[in-house]
Image (cartoon, rainbow over all chains, first blue to last red; front, side, top):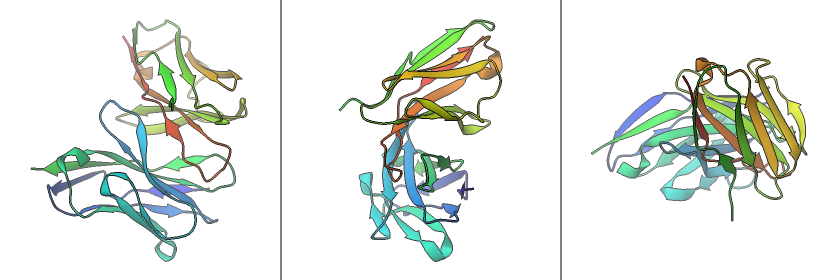
Length: 113
Length: 114
């Protein structure tokens, strides 16, 4: 069975500072990994995904994530936070054997002016 | 391209009433998922369909909840009778046949049971 752990349910950063949202997964098979963002009163929107190939993945809005197999991690980063980045972020994993997704519990990002 | 379409966007009703939520997945997607999101429990998978067939409904909380997918372009989630604790945002998502593809979410239905 898959599981996803997001460390820190709430993260606050200053505008212009580095954003780091942590995600660790457990998987017995090579996983497919995803980050989603949810703005208030909206559905989840795909930020980026890792399936195969390059382990550093770039997504929308300047976000990127690095797949580290040895650490079973897929942390999300952005060099410089913007006020518009304030949202809920979800990490998700698919084991690729079916269409089952496993979501983390989410991290709420606050950006301080 | 049209995304996942959910209706209604908001629903307010009294406890005991029947509630029907609707979802139209993206054309060509063969998997459909229903989620519930609350502050207390976060995002919960209720049920998912593959090629219109329910595959896993272990997340459906009670017999009061039922879901159908009569064809590839339509699904419903029904609650009968509704209770105040069913108040939540309900999301529908769909995904293409390849297993390495992401799910695409609708904007959700905000349900309030009084």
